[in-house]
Amino acid sequence: MAWARGPAGALAVLATAIVLGLVSWNAFRPMPPAPELTLPRASPTGSAGAPTEVGEDTLVVHAAGAVARPGVYEVRLPGRVLDVLTAAGGALPEADLDQLNLAARVSDGDRVYLPRVGESMPPPSGVGSASVGSSGGAGGAAAGPVNLNSATPAELDALPGVGPATAKAIVDHRTQKGRFASVDDLLSVRGIGEAKMADLRDKVRV
Image (cartoon, rainbow, N blue to C red; front, side, top):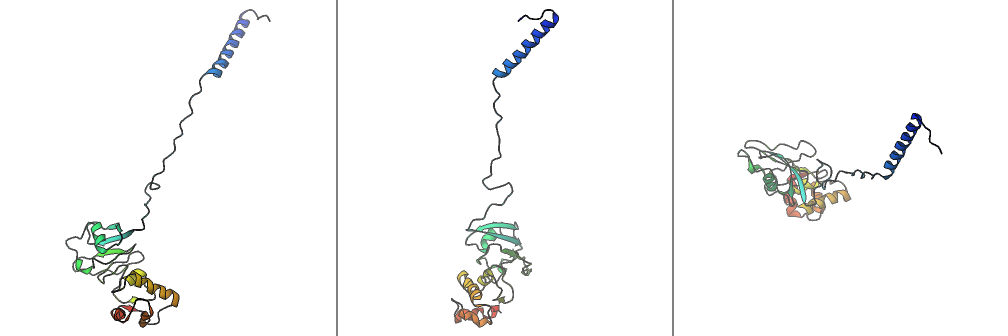
């Protein structure tokens, strides 16, 4: 094959050489490394700001009133009013500790309200705001008699001489046998005898 002569032939040869050079360079040049793929790492406690799961041996309780740091705290079982006050930084100087039973048990979701001197214990203000009072129990023990047909286990547990087992027995009896027709029906509940009935008679109603 004879190459074309003259300027046109020279340009053609030059163009062919450039094309061949580019093809050869692309074919043999090293490939760039693949970009590194970066993924977000999962947090051990879930997404940022998400609350951690409370363990079975922990209660979440609201401390309010004359405490150093009112707020929501976690306390270990068995939770007592004293544990909640300690978690909240203790009582303020104007607090009236005599209005609380510091040894009373608290339940998950309770509110422990510590009144000031001269202040009356406020009534529960709604769901999730039950207060531990001077009656020696947790879970919103009211100033008046506790309704046996609507009381929660925590409210029954607040009654004198009634512990968790007896409170559960009362609720189980109510579930299985129906509503209490009279206060004396408590005598048919396992764990309640005449002596305990005498202590409870003026503190419960139907």
